[in-house]
Length: 192
Image (tube, rainbow, N blue to C red; front, top):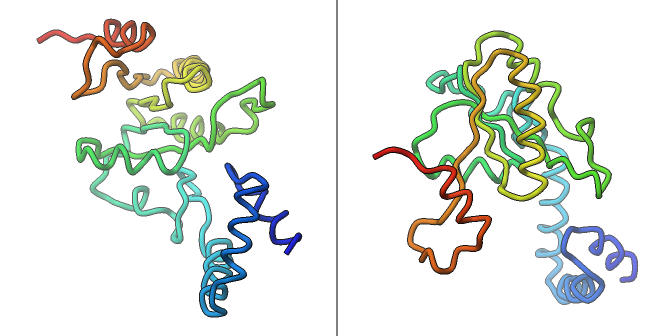
């Protein structure tokens, strides 16, 4: 039981109490449920990998986005994590390619450019087919730093570099927006 708790504590966001609750839940589960959980973990490790082109998590290589001939290879949207792709896909407005960094620059946490998947992005852009790179990192300090760093690298490649707009979310009230959100909304304004 102690070994299971120690392993569960390695999961992000799982502390000692949560690990204990999960371990006792697994203990109380049926043999079939425990086996299904263990098999699911093994299958993820055995069958999923990173796409050799965009670094998305996939069971086929290249992934469904990179192998889709109807997508526009001249436009690449750079995101922090594979989960960010689904948010963009939900809009049904983007038909380009993706590139997943698997994190952001964070000197305080020891994450530098060498820890992110930047080199294969630069190789894709250097191939000459890419016309625009959209930087869709989160509007956090780390996300902004990553976007600025990538912008400098990519502009040297003579490619158009854009940043997603940030600001007041649709359906919210301006009175509840903090000053940074309001500043970004004013900076990202567009002509009507």
